[in-house]
Image (cartoon, rainbow, N blue to C red; front, side, top):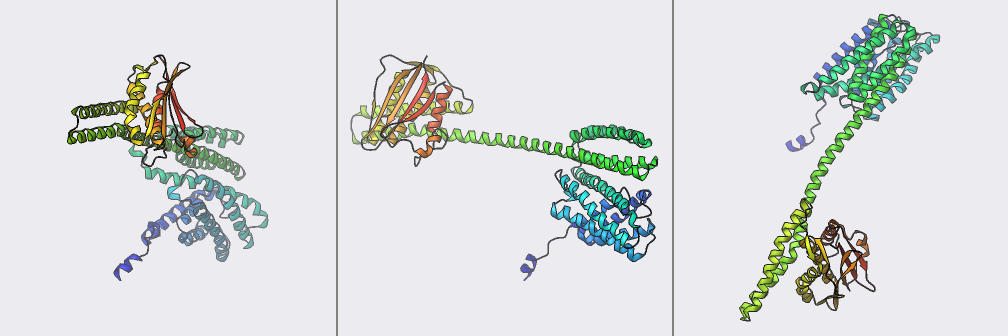
Amino acid sequence: MTDIAASIQAPALPSALRPRGFAALALAYLAVYFALNLLTEGRSLNGSPITLWSPDNALSVMLIMESWAFTPVVLVAQIVTDFAISHVNYSTPAVICAETTLVAGYLGMAMALRRGFGLNIRNMRPRDLIAVMAVSPLGAAITGLVYCGALVGVGAMAPGSFVGAFAGFWIGDSAAMGIVIPAMGALLRVAAAKPWRGATIGDPLVHLAVTLIFLMFVIAFSASNIQHRYLFNLAYLPMLLIGLRFGYDTAAIVLLFVQIFLVGALDWFHVIDRRFDGYQVMMFILAVSGQALGAVATEWEAARTKLRSQQIELAKVSERATNGAMAAAMAHEISQPLASIATYVYGARRVLESGQSLDIALSALRKAEGEATRARLIIERLRDFVATGDMTRELVDIDELVETIMRLEDDAARGRGVMLKRVGVQPISLQANVDRVGVEQAFANLVLNAIEAAPASGGRVAVSLSARDRFAVLAVEDNGPGVDPEIADRLFEPFETTKPRGMGLGLPLAKEIATRHGGRLRWLPVVPAGARFELELPLE
């Protein structure tokens, strides 16, 4: 029973919803809310609770986003503020009715941001800006219509004041939420990142200080004389530069300071409400522009960082793939000489055990010794070839090279009952400056593939050497089933094979060797059945 009870324990509550955390956050909200109302009371409209700059309302929406359980706290704050700070002159039931509609609007906006767009104020991302800028004006408009309508309905506002009150409410709440919510999210992100512990905080601080001083003078000059209002447009230049240079978080935080400076300057110079509205509209446009550019810059930098990390990871994967390809190619290439060594040693042992001629046994051992030397050279050359692409070139008689491969693969052909023969002997010597071991291995792969593809009974493999346009053409033709159409287009890609125990590395390696010599490897179908591979090498 204890185990069952432990398995169905309720999940831990978020810290904000635990009694102590809930109380602490509610008290902090109330303190800040009342302070903001005292500071913005000077911009109230006709003795109503509506102000032209409403950061307290943005604070209420953010609190409800933490949990809808804070809704009663917000409602209490609204009611107490109406009586204690706004000094409304209508009845308590009318206040409760009006403020309930207002808090219902905030609840809807908070749920739209949190549930609809997945916005988390503790982990706001630049892309969440779209949600804030979409919900803030629309939600403020709907809430303002309902709230102002409720004020008119309870007799707290004259019907003729409805339009002006609604416009002031909409502008004040839209500007506040479009600036305060992104700024708060940015502050939380910056606090979590602890940038002050790094060594790069000085440069942004200097830029911010210079920018804020510049904006302070712009706001002061534009607010002191209404005819100079156009000077506020100069604020776009540093804000756009900040967004582009430092990204979304910095732009959102600076915009909050700009708004505070702007409101302070407008109050200092006693700018009338009608002009105050115009500045708030310009400020909202500035906020959208600066934050949008900052979000684009941040996303671009994040994409660059992700691209760099992917390139680093790709380099690691490529390195591992190269090492794996080298190991696979080495295993593929040395399997042939190792198989020949085993065959020769086994034959020599059988000859010695049967008491036959010692010369036969010695001949087999000499061939095994040659195959062991060949395996060592293959490993050394393949290591350099795969790792660095280095080749040791020398002047090679191609005719002699073909004869060498014919002798090496003759035993494999006879073991399968396949007739291996050379046709069309070249009357003159063909020489090329090539890596002997690499070309031998490439050509040996073609011959061995042809032997394995030819029928075990009645199989034929024809090898030829000819000259074509300053190229030596080493051709191998068999009478097997030919190339499977399913892999014809991928024939020279690594690990493409139809052999039960094949690795699919012989042809890709042979093609790479031909390419690095300035030649090529191609295949041609043979009628009625079979395949022909041609290895072309530039002549000396």
